[in-house]
Length: 211
Image 1 (cartoon, rainbow, N blue to C red):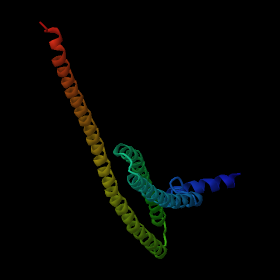
Image 2: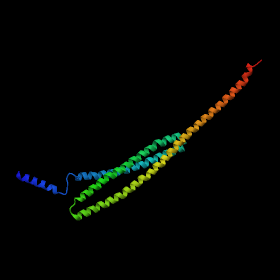
Image 3: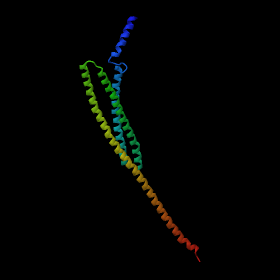
Image 4: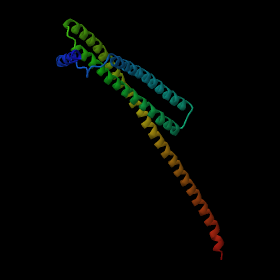
């Protein structure tokens, strides 16, 4: 019993001098899970980007068909407004997924650097650090390309928004044109009524003015 207590006490004395703090070090399983999460997020970005591209193509195709089928400006405007809103949502989801991917990736690199800082052997430390630097630089390059692609897609959204604004104004102008037609018809009916009333008066007045 005394031997066990002595060993435990000795271990306790060694703890303050240890380079590793067990409370802050992730287990191998946790590290593996972090890597798997990054891979899953990257695949999610690919899936969302493909979905975004497909949806944009589908909306454009539907619009082209509507124009070919001579759909009214009102119908075209309602169609574009509805489905272009979905494209915006797809873009926001893709952008959010990309930023989430980078956030988790930075945690991944932080773990690599944390583990490296605890390596005592200088040669192993440098070799391990160089591996991390290489993979991190490759990631930075690819992430920058992804961000650039997202930013260029923002222009795509602006172009689609312009189409929506033009369609809205076309609907307004169409509505005003319809009102002008109605006003012209009212004026025509009024003129006809006035002419008829004048005819009526001219023909009936003598009936009441006979001497």
